[in-house]
Amino acid sequence: MLDVRPQPALHDTVTALTQRLFHEARLLDDERFEEWLELLCEDVSYHMALKSRRFRADRSAPIAVGAGNVFNDNLARLKLRIDRLRSGFVWAEDPPNFVRRVVSNVEVLDADEPNEAVVHSVVVIHRNRIDGQTRLLTAGRTDRWRKGGESWLLAAREIALDHSVLPDSNVNVFF
Image (cartoon, rainbow, N blue to C red; front, side, top):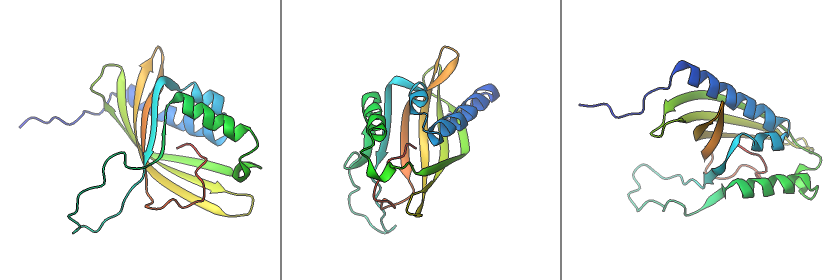
């Protein structure tokens, strides 16, 4: 029987993409959003669907894919979100929250397209608000990174939040 699972990427690719994820997290933690946008492909897809939680014995029809999204962004929409954060009109982010991202469990696989890789990772986002409230968000991510010249650019990100209900009144952070 043939093994048709994607194969792990070469060591140099794994190292480069793991470092890229760490760099991306630091840019976002430091609110260096314009530099973060430079890591994205022009045709980037950035998506987080709503999750449902069901009993294992539940045999009802699954909820349709795309039935609800926390966000489903392209590059223009991501730029709008950044402009909104910079506007001063997002009361939950003024003054800015303290945010720290931890990226782990990185697995890099060769993609079906040349010069692309699929990257699975886990992100933990710690957010501390001015009122002293602390929020902890965790999610699994599946990315598609594309080699553009000498650097890797994010082409797509699917975020699977590890919460069936959003644990905060707003989600103004990037995963």
